[in-house]
Image 1: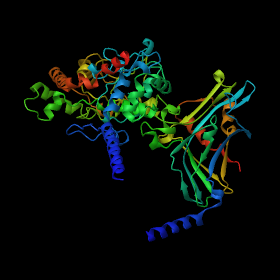
Image 2: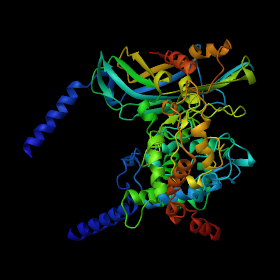
Image 3: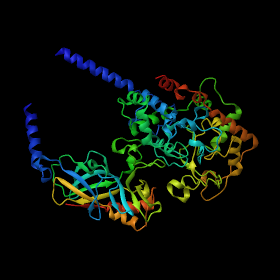
Length: 232
Length: 347
């Protein structure tokens, strides 16, 4: 009994000595996504659209998979999320905040994947956020849709744009790694999603519809990764 | 104290027993067959899960107007394909662009659909449910209907322990049923197992020899498919303009490549080919001996002409007929679960 007691004390003191500012006040850190359009915060709580500009442009839906969240100190991974992936939906505020467990270590950046890795894509029926019933899975050809952005744009045929970015295999792979430096280990790591980065392609009429894996989806996914920027 | 311990142990035993009852792994790999490709660890077969999947397979509730079930295009008596239609028809009498493939031995499948667009058995049902010519519905809407039905909440509870009806459970139970559809008891199988009193005729034996010489490279025994894709020299149908696997991969080298089907129960799975263009086996043999359209994308196995005499063609067909597995075609454990739906009607 006595050795176990000392071991427990040792373990606790070791953990306490490594506690960093990120976990101060006993709070676990959280990753917070804040969708914006040209710097203006989008709100999903009122009405159908997240953003409306007259009758010529709107943002109606932003959904994406955020997977394999890691915190890094320099190049070293100091913490890895046990939850494989999170489905983030701009219309559902609760999904915009991902609570991370206590880190207890210093970290300088956060890294996550935008999308679903290829192994998960060929693993059959999965549950939770990966349940195909969540509407982020293609029916006609197997594979997850990593990101969906939809809305109205008067320059598009039928006035609708639909960007369904996905594809996991070979040159059509669209998963993106996002790295964001963390300035201070604040309780909340707020990451902006500047949708204009990708929606300028829609507004200038270049791309209005992507519904299949391929070259276009790869190019737009590359652009989508650039939407994620640190806000504080 | 002892009393409490006894109660806890007894409760644990009951829970354990009910758990064990639900988890009955009864998938058997036929003697001499390769290991299945399906990972049963991620979806352990249970009697209740298979029964639920079977109910779903036969229930038109999964189509927009509740008229079309999986079984509408996959009938057991014809090796789970749509007999007598070159192109399968679905909801509102709409005609699709392909002949529905046979379903059997799916535990050994890799890519599904004629073009391999589906990468796992579990997610296969999503395609016909959403296809506007087949069931014209969605997974989400199907689940809403199932949750409201009188039958399914209890079937899900029996299969998974509670009444929660999720996409994952829905798809896994359908897989469970489809995995049980194994055909491994044709006369060919019995001969290969050296069963007493079962032999090939001289004609069938010669057919097997010719088959192994000319067809085996693609229709590999014992599954009678490699699971791969091939361009077998069929000219493209100018109306359907179906280029098969190229649509999925985007590679020109995959043009007119279609999945190599298993030949098991071929006697009953007519019409043949991805678009059902041949009604009879004789036509199929004629295609391979004199109808192949040569091209740069023709599969290499078919570049050398196959030469068969009239008698040899007959022998080949005689062998192919030994792949009929009547026990499979009439196995009541794969058939319409009347007892379930009758119970629902009475209730």
